[in-house]
Length: 83
View 1: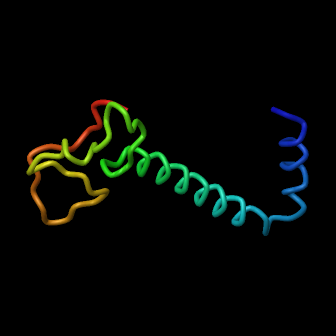
View 2 (view 1 turned 90 degrees about the vertical axis):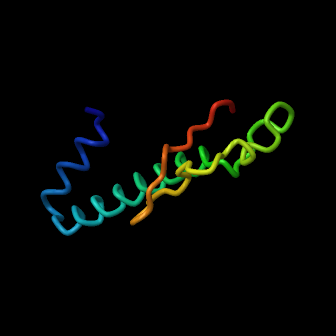
């Protein structure tokens, strides 16, 4: 472990009210990172304008492109084939 982390653990025993803040901020940062990666893979994001200018044209009927779909049935989940 790094010395900074050890120092943080040592001081956290003196200040237990910091623990919920660390847990909440860590969860928020992990969630933000997950959503950033998820949105970067969405069909309406264009990464390569020359070979794949309109990736949303490759989405067929029955493909799930939503993050969460309640009470809806899809044939398959959409995956980006080329970046």
